[in-house]
Length: 383
Ligand code: FE2
Image 1: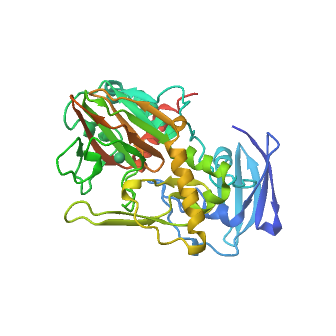
Image 2 (image 1 turned 120 degrees about the vertical axis):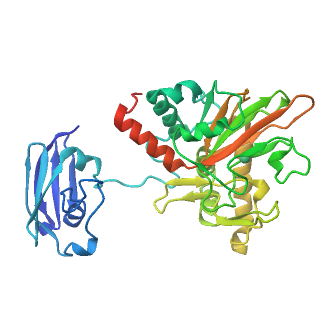
Image 3 (image 1 turned 180 degrees about the vertical axis):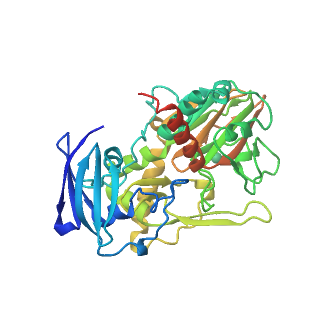
């Protein structure tokens, strides 16, 4: 951790500038520092939540005095003459001076995009992640980094997928139930419940919010075919951006529509872009599902032809075999996908033998929460 060396008041107290052992000069605004004060009158010592509102902090808050001592920054604010101490590592971790957003379509730190050349399939063992917190941490970290991971050596028992969700959080129940059976049916309510091959897709884009995780758990898979494929939607979006920035912009700027009314009593609909960006261009989510795409009515006439060219190009990238990682699940194996990022597909299957998977949804915020807690207790895995 870099050490803080000195601090001086700048902009007549509206900010201060810190100097660091590695030569960095980082400015912090007085109002920002006061709002983020770590003292027990500003932050609850019990739960870390903020006790004051911004409107309780004077708008003319300035830095009156500042000093560096014992690896921390001390700041006295005007007009209330309150003195607060900021540890150096906290300041460095939360510094914002000099940070600039890269080009649109960037991904958060710790996310690694991939294509069919991905060397090692991210995976863990059911028995180990169930019993060893470090193994669970490592498996969840793979999900965060790659947006999917397999789990092997589990029981080939109906309902075992609920134990996978319980490792890190809670099942999200939907109209499909707490979980759903993925196998060929007569009169299916969803094309997933047939032997058809399915183009790579994200699930349930007609839902708002979409389920952010899906678990698909294999109980039988002796039919010919039926392999699972995954495609990194973030990599696909970035490839579209690199090939054709205008097409990328069109898909990010305009909403598509998605709809499902395939069973009685259900009519779900959502209006969201296929490529969702944060205001500063961070890739947040990809929604791609030809089966539930509704008529697109939110693109101006003058841009619709170009929008469709971009949509087609994205679909070609998604279908490019070089983008896909494939595997065939054995009974007792499952995989989890970040449904806001990684698309999944299935090859068609037919003939003798059977294919029976169970699927359920869960929430990524809970998975990431469990992962952060484990990392806090055990440390972040090196490498
Ligand atoms: Fe699906």
